[in-house]
Length: 245
Image (cartoon, rainbow, N blue to C red; front, side, top):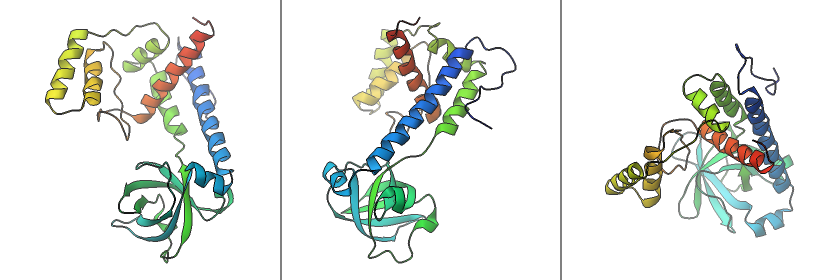
């Protein structure tokens, strides 16, 4: 089944146009990300090393848990951070990749702890293995589409989300509630950035809860819905900039 087709609806949604714009926006962002990754992977290896787009390793040993391994940094510095997904390869990643969607879990004394999506990708004898790591990612398009389908039903919270994105409802902040929640969060030991997030969540008249791997506050919800909402806001801004109502 083509996931680009409209969602079968048991009724005519008053936001059908917006829903299809969001669906097209999801695929547009996916295609842009894939093109950028392919462009980066196609660069000369030495150029990528100069720009910090690749990390060189020498040696791979079994980690503390099944599906994990310690990779020894050979030389150079990269821009990767804990939580990034990596593509491991021995040459050009477009042709010589041997592990994809490898999670960079931890860095300790010139070693990186990696978690493999497929434990069978870990070489049995990897002590002298020379390899490279480049930025990779997970295609979350199916999850974004699932979140959109749930919102598109238009019941309860979904109806509010669609009305907000369509500009039919407005967000209001209660400054007193904002200060109250922010002060309370600071008193509980949260840092200023986290406290500000708590204050906004408490003060706004409509609340969208979300969760990310690096979120300021661990709120309940789904990552796809959060990213979908951010993308939709960007779409709305572009429409307003073009003179759309």
